[in-house]
Image (cartoon, rainbow, N blue to C red; front, side, top):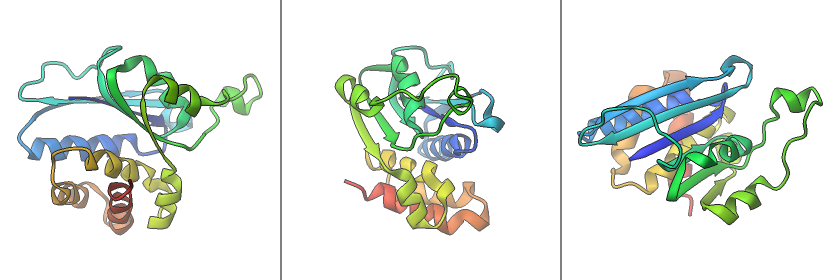
Length: 187
């Protein structure tokens, strides 16, 4: 299974990959994780690859190989599109975060990204910011999306919860557990 997690700096892509990676390790899989940081501290692109199977030799996911793209921001989902394999699935937060060229006025944020993606792939969109806010932490968008993805796996709910408990700082534990539950119970 090849999962690509994309977002911008500060959205928690690394925590999401840690939760995913630790959960599948606990299920007995060989897991490889590779993190590619852009200008993450300035809101730049952050990409994490998580691969797991009986045996995995490389952490890198090439174009056309991702089974799932978990995107925390709409433009990052669009940028990652070439990596999705035919028949793959995209789970995307509907939030838009302007990159620096848009902020400076050098470019405009592309229009109708959700419509463009929906015409090309199996797309699930979630207003994860709304559910993160409901959970009590606007930064829990990542855990909401992990919950949505987890619902579509063979791994038991309780296993994910155990991993969140061991991967999350104590001060964010309650809100992350709530965010996961909200994501898991969508649709």
